Image 1 (cartoon, rainbow, N blue to C red):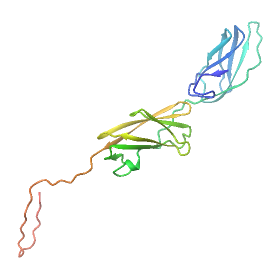
Image 2 (cartoon, rainbow, N blue to C red):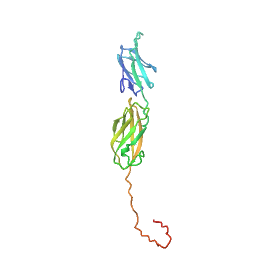
Image 3 (spheres, one colour):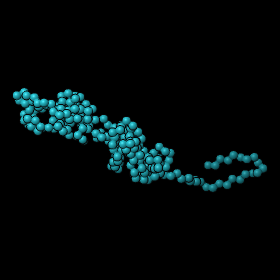
Image 4 (cartoon, rainbow, N blue to C red):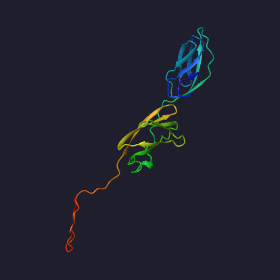
Length: 212
């Protein structure tokens, strides 16, 4: 028995297709250790049978075949299938790398044109394996040590940019989150108005003068 999916024992498809072979015209029954009977079909010999909806968790899938005379085969060997349909949580953090942030750290404001973007997956999502920056169609690996990831040399246009991040777990589930990062200009101090000369009478009390 062989399920279709991302790997032999892990899938985000909760109705996987199980393959195998049996006597022609036999009734094949598929059973799950979690859900009981999940499919039955009369097969021509080789078969591909799609199960009913499987619960999240680890299933031991077995099969039996019953011929037209009512004889039932021994139970097949067990196929282990782990179903995971739960999307990752939003990242614990995602934004400008501190070296790219020219303003207050964490405010996602910078005057830099080429920046690095850093992130960290949620603490509980230890099965997150990759991150994709949709804006640049760039995918990077997520560290299995500390959950961090970095997109380098990202071009940042002037003004606010909405970045879309996708996180993928080992089963192929995806979560999507966004962050706005703004490139602004370096502040410039300018003088507006004509120069003014103020005369003060040394014999008089000083007068408060308001300049406009």
